[in-house]
Every structure is written in C-alpha cells, then in structure tokens.
Image: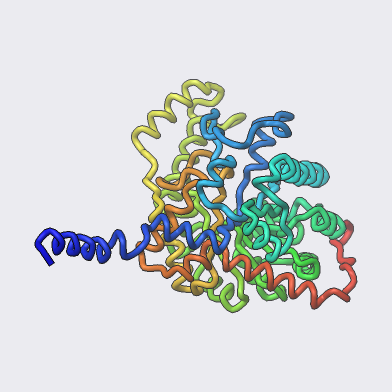
Length: 423
C-alpha cells in the first residue's frame, strides 16, 4: 500500500469510527423514536383560545401556519405541530367555572363542535381518535390523532346523562374539578368542603370507568386525588400537573400520591406552566397578584382605586424592580426526572397546557414545535430510547388501553342513576 492509499484508508477508518458516523444525531434519534411511538400531549387549550379570540372567525381561520405572528401569538398551529412531531393530542374543551351550569354545558358542546370542525377541515393532518388502537393507526397514517378532554366537573351540571352525552360525542376524559370546589368534589385552588369526593363524586368516577373515559385528577385537591384513586377501577391520569416536591403548588402531585399513582397504573403528564414548574416563580406570582390588589382593587380597595392609569404605571415600576424569576426547559425536565424517580418511568408523560397559559412559558418551550428539544434534554440526562418512548406517548397509550379493558369488563353494568340530593 503506497502512502496516498494508506492515508485514504486511514481517513475512511477515522470517519467510520467518529462520533458523527458511529451514532445518529440527537435530532435523528428523537425523530426515529417519535416515528415509532406517537408523541401525545395530555392538554392543549387551542380550542378555547380560538373561541375566545376569534369569535365567529374560529370556524374559518387558517390554522395551517403563522399563528405565532398574531397578536397575541398562539402556541399552536399545524405547521408547528408537524415540526414538533406531535402524533396525538387531547384537545381541552375548557369553559370558565364562573359560568352558570347550563351555560357551561352549552359552551362545552360548542367547543366539542369546534374540535370536530378543525379536524374535519384538515383531514390530511387530523383524525378523531377514541381508543389507543385509533391513535396508533392514525399516527401510522401520518396524521395527528385528536382526542377530547372535558376540563372541569362543573361542565356536567351534576348530571350523569350529560357526562354520557359528552362520551357519545367523543370526549375521552373528564377533569373532576377546575378551579372551584363543586357540590361533589374539592378543588386544589378553592376552600375544601367535602374532604375529597361525596358519594355522587364516587359515582362519577364509577361512571367514567364504565364508559371507558379517563379520570383526570389535575386541578383537584389532594384529598380528592386520594378518594378518586381509592374509587377507580381503571388507571387515572393527571393531564397537566407537575411534582409538588419541586414546586409546592397544590395543583401539583405529592410524592405520596405519586406512589399511589404508580400502584394504580396511572400517569402524571407534566405541565409546562411556570407557576407549576418553579417554586420561585410561584412565590413571585403571588407577590405580583398581591401588588395589583394593593394598587387597585375596586370598588373598595387599592392605593390608586379608580385611577387605572396611575395603578398601571405603578405596577410597571414594581415589575421592573421585581422581574419574574427565570423558568427553563431544564426545570420541566427536572419534574419529569423526579416523577420517574418516585413513581417509575412507566408513570410520567407530557401535558403542556399550551395556549392555556398565554405567553408565560419556560425558555425553550414556547410552542408545540419544541417537544423534541425536551426529549433531547432527557436523552442528554441518560434516558434510554425505550424510556423516552414511554414518556412521549407509550405510557398514556397503556393507560388508555387499560381503561378500555375496564369498560369492556363492565359492559353489562347499567348506566348509573346517581344524583345529588335535591338536584
């Protein structure tokens, strides 16, 4: 072998054994995982924010691209869903807990209709899914499996017939409460009344099991979490909650409950909202709210009551002197790591809350195109491909299939006739 031939052979050997050639890039690694296992987010409020911002235009607005350029910008559009390798999404049909019960039902039906509308308008991108098998089939076809989550027990108006109607229209989960305590369940962010669930609340859980709808425990008090875990025959989900050990917000899940979730077979889908990610941000947010109240709280309170311009200027000065603590993608990854450590890697997923928290999102997680960056961070921390697949979507698919099996086992059970006293 002459010198030039030897040098060429050595160069080829060096190239073949270099890190760039020996293993795929992290982007390629994540793309390969998400081609085999759909990335499924447990909670996105796109439907509600479209309704709120666009009015009647929500039925016709172009959803394909560019929504990040609107004012205010959206976290979601089809182009970014594609860049984020999203394979399945639970679209939240959220309505305000402040509305009267019948209006909550009406607006829930409107939002279910809206989800079905945009799925029908973009059949090359979306398809409705009810089961785990549906999700896998739709993902294999190159589309985004679209599920529906009802984000608040108040939206059933304490009527199991309404719950059954939502199921028949395609709803896949019910969040037992939103921000307010109900006549049958305590919320995490309201004064407790029942110590968890009332007998009717237990009946709601049982009817969800019978229907094959997932029991979602985001937003509920810890006592309600425990009561629901004791009552359910199927695995539960937390569609968008994080770890309370890292951020002591009552919306998050304590280590004790994480262990109960593991025993139940459920999954906690980590929320990206800064107040549920960073304890420093949670404390800052409370201080900011207190300052707003101090400055202007009509009709009776506030240093600048009835003077919104002065109050706004003073608030801007306070915010300048008290900037929000940084919240980052790495902090979200810390919650994923913690839940996996306490409950096990089989019991953690992703529940972003995109388009439900405005512009307040962690650095690096500004929209639905950023999931691969989060999975890359987990890979950097040593997560194996199989565990990344579980986090991305494998765990929630397992929970969906288990819930379907429970419903099949209850097929002969008649619909519940439970009701609240005097309702």
